[in-house]
Amino acid sequence: MNDTPQDIITAINRLRQERRAVILAHTYQPAEVQDIADYVGDSYGLSVQAAAIKDADLIVFCGVQFMAETAAILNPTRKVIMPDPSAGCPMADMITADKLRAFKAKHPGAPVVCYVNSTAEVKAESDICCTSANAVKIVKSLGDVPEILFVPDQFLGKFVENQLGRKLVLWEGFCPTHYTLGPETIARMKAEYPDAKVMVHPETRPDTQAAADYILSTGQMVDLVKDTNIKRFLVGTEEGIIHTLRKTAPHCEFIAISQFLRCPNMKKTTLPKILNALETGETVISVDPVIAAKAKKAIDAMLDISRRP
Image (cartoon, rainbow, N blue to C red):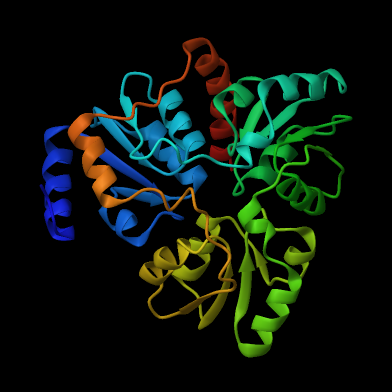
């Protein structure tokens, strides 16, 4: 039995070599999970990394269900396991394949842009996926079509609308964690830290975005602070990214803008659960091959557009 954190870390490092495993972790994961991972990133970065993996037989995905599904879709010959398969995404659960088919029936011929925060079944019913980092580019690539359906995050959709100056047909989904952040909290924190710049995620509400200095995906936040003269940031996204930002830019001060920006599902992964997953090979995340093939087309379409200048 491994009793101390260091014992657990030592065992994880031994087993990852024996099992030829790679550990992927989202930036919202607990600090100790990020530190044990081979790669830490946002949804887009993890999608790219999953697609590029070569020297691994096993992927340990530290995130939520839809992310592990994406890794499984992009790695059909590898085993993908989640340390805690109960880690879901409330936003992803706000739309189903049946609901999307009914939505499409009301707007025949309209392409569907699907945020990666969705199930494999929903991706399979979509034309192209997007992440918060590339949503504007993906929608713009579709050209001047009469209608574009955007699911499931209405607030990311509204951000895209504002950036492109065009209306989308939005599904009324949202992230419950990001929804808690309002402009009144930003105003209060700005009064306390007047020299700080505010960055928020595009999953936040439009009135919250309007009060921020920057509206960025988690990956874009990390990129911004790598080489900046700004000394202090108020961070308006899930608190896990604070650890990532501090490691990336130790010369800056990062302050969580709200105590409520904590996703309980992202915090389900622990070092003992990672060790157990490596020891047992559980829990395997698999996607029906027919659904996976359809979903992969939407994911590949996104990756193709994202690679273009």
